[in-house]
Figure 1 (tube, rainbow, N blue to C red):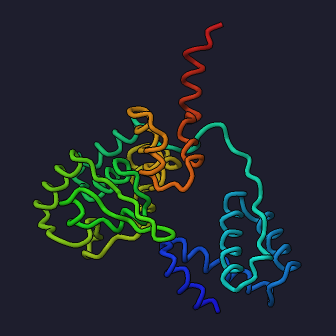
Figure 2: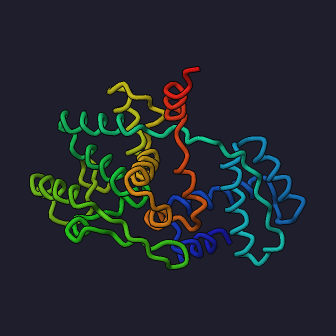
Figure 3: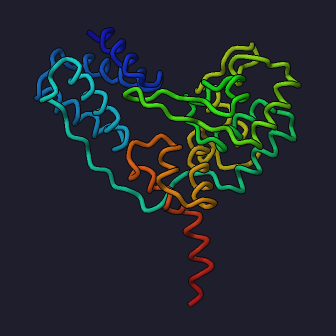
Length: 267
């Protein structure tokens, strides 16, 4: 049944990371419980609450609920746990650190990594989406991404970045196929990117906690709203199903809040 479930998830056009996460959750459940019933499901939820943070718990519950729908037991679906929403964004790279980080990568001739960081921050791509970008997409200026329910989201590549990329791929003699590759010429992995970015952060003396792929997507959103305050457009560009998800970018980071307080509160 689990194999059929994975096939079903692929047919729903879910990302590989999501499919892997859902499959892992279902495997985890059946390692502990032999059947699907309300008692066992509630016990499993209790274990999740004890072991993980709220956001992770809800991701696991989402996987369970998806599986319950698949096997025709949607009536047993579990309620998500309530999350305590922070009034500031956490662990988001500052614009100054992003510019310093990308500049250092370029100066040190780590151009593959320079463009990885640039694309993450200039397009708002998720890491799974970044890995799909091909030379052909650079040539036309965008990549169409097929999401849940067959929805299409267009990932735009800004003109300045396209022009810079075209010079680089010409220099590297990359004429077709995936834009970002490892030293063996194969498409790079999301895990490999996350690991290497942390190493560069340490080397360049930037807080490693703010240097991870999704941090640059957050920075894209923050910078976009600073320059063009259109929340609905940003929601479309980010691929958010609800504009409420996008509202978090109206909040300031804790560092930004601190700087404002230091400037304003003089009494």
